[in-house]
Image (cartoon, rainbow, N blue to C red):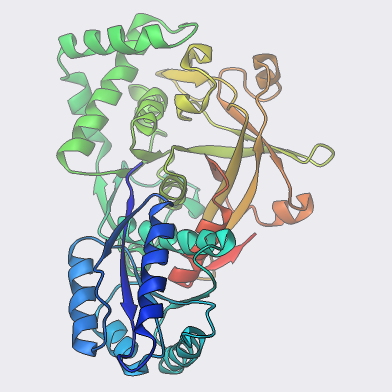
Length: 441
């Protein structure tokens, strides 16, 4: 996982205890470095507004996702105000719990001034030795990193809208305004032509690489070939056009006339792309937020069943869950898509997601306003015999959750749900706060 870039600037007044400001600076840098952050900083204290603006601008140019302003002593509020007005990047101010430095005094007036002026920021107070405080700061920085990573991303919708699925479609202007994501469209025909014209040699090589990694391989050669041709074609398009996120409309054209996208989506999600099914734009963005929050893969699936007695949510997908969410790829079988769903067939993955702490999230819209539903829990790996209670040829995640089950149901505003490994609840909440999006948990 790449280190997150963040800038650190320590402010002080030359008439105050600059020795304490320097101590705060070096202790803060030392503590932050222990949290997998790539820090930009200078060891000199900043006293003047123009210096602060110049340094913040430099750090932003270098790729920082946020800037921490340390209140080393009493500082002049206009220095912070003018810097935040000038440099468009998330800012946080940090006051140290040292009575001799008057750091909190500075933090109070700066925090109040920024609020009165309507300038967005985060206010932290406490010791550089506080694990709890460092956790809060790192959570904030990770949320800022998500925001930076989403900005100017391109989301490719392949094939358009699946009929009847209102909750998969988004207002492209709203998405651009809030997240900075550009939504573009590619027709399914382009993927089909790339697939059928893919060199046979390339497909044979893909079979040699991938098939031995899986468990039982049940589909016939022709079905496997078409599924891998879709993988080849989709990856070529994503790579050539620099797409990291895509929402694929599989139904009805491709799944009935050529092949389902299940195996292609599964492999691409394994490889670092973020791919949702059924043209689900909100799903793709939800998955990307979880991927960035966790630094790992996230899945797309349907809310299939909620067991009130066990507090267990079953998430089922028609075959495209990332195979690396299994305990081991050798435990993942390859099966053929159900004929009732697909006239052409296609390869599906069959497994139960491994045991792990997880975070679930789903972006939604109510009366034009965006919101995010988020929850935490643990996936519980189940024997493959249990998959047949729903669909024995499809991958499934069994999520033991801690929140109230009836409340959970009321927050299902789509047929789709998404999870990632790890406890990222607070990071997603902080991201929603940064974006001024309602967060329900």
